[in-house]
Image (tube, rainbow, N blue to C red; front, side, top):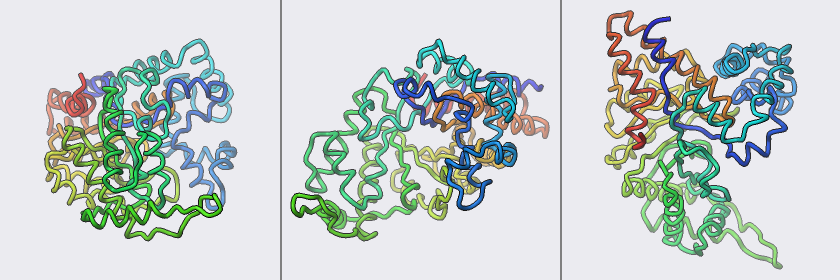
Amino acid sequence: MSDIRDFVMGHPLFCHHDHHVSFQDFDAGRDGYDHKSLLGYATADLVTAAGPGVPAELAVDRLAEYWPAICTTGYGRAVDLTSRELFGLEYTEENWPAITDALQDAIATKSAAEVYEDLVHERAQNRWTIQDGAFRLGNEGALRQDAYPDSYAFAFRIDGLLAMTDAVVIDALERHTGLNVYTLDHLVDALNLAIDEFQETGRLASIKIGMAYQRDLTVGDPTYAEAEAAFVRIRNRKVFWDGIQQNSGAVDAAASRNLGDYVLHRLIQRAADEGLPVQIHTGYLAGNWGSLAGTKALHLLPIFDKYRTVRFDLFHASWPWASELGAIAKNYPNVWADMCWAWAMNPAESERALSEWLDGVPYTKIFGYGADTTYPWCNVGYSLQAKIGIARVLEAKVAAGYYSEATACEVAECILLRNGEEFYGLD
């Protein structure tokens, strides 16, 4: 093993993106954790391997049939890395009962907080985590201080306002804030109040935009009048007849777009006012059958140009458009390129992307890792996967004579940890 590989493999990480369950939810699911709990994103590859007409639940039920076809993918390799590192067992059918027993034994006498400390901090070496999923409307535990480790900071996310077709998310905003939302100005006031409440916890790290799952990333700049007309149309979609709530008809795409774009601008302006970073999902979508057509980071160029003081963290290497993200990060001083989740999606492409980015983008503008998982044990395999790929890239730079070992270690220190600490003000 090379010196640079030793340095990378032993280095703590900044996890730029995760969806971990809370301590309370972890405890509620204890009895159900088995070898399938290690699968994470591999479930989507099982569905792909099964072919059309096989739902996810059935594909997972047929794990023994489809696992051989996916054990070689990035998702599959992450599962095997986790099992080998934690339990010394290859993830194979004959070992699944032993893996389940080992997992249950590992958590049986530990509190949820101790499990997270052991797996996330000690084994996966994740020093800091930006958690996505807690600070959302409707999550009763969103403001709790005892739901996650102290090393977690949080992203505020309200994608429902960015692709509205009815008033359901407005109702949720009303319930959460206690405000009546009858006008566009009321909507903005309620949105800002929700952000205020989360910010008062002292753990708000960023604004997260995940609207790529509901709509494309092309963003217009509607006038107040256009957005107000759209709000009225959507808000008035609810009518009452004989005391029963009914829908008054479909909302056209233009109205939804105008209101969503207006709210997006208000969110980014709030980030500008507060000095908060903005995280944006770009590229590949989790699961199966997702539409990739509108997820290119290139669609966001007018936003980057308009909000030049806002720091944008663009997720997932924008795969399969990683080269485009590299060009954007090179050209726009307010854009950082983030490899969270990318190492699991496609390790070979991630290595190529990182090598290419390092040739074109200041390494202080690259974030090397984010697990993007649900359960803490998954971070062990995902962090190893990222470190292996990063070490390989830096070894190649040294072997080619482009970097000294000292330079390679400096690059590793930054993309693994320091860039994230400086970006989010954590130390």
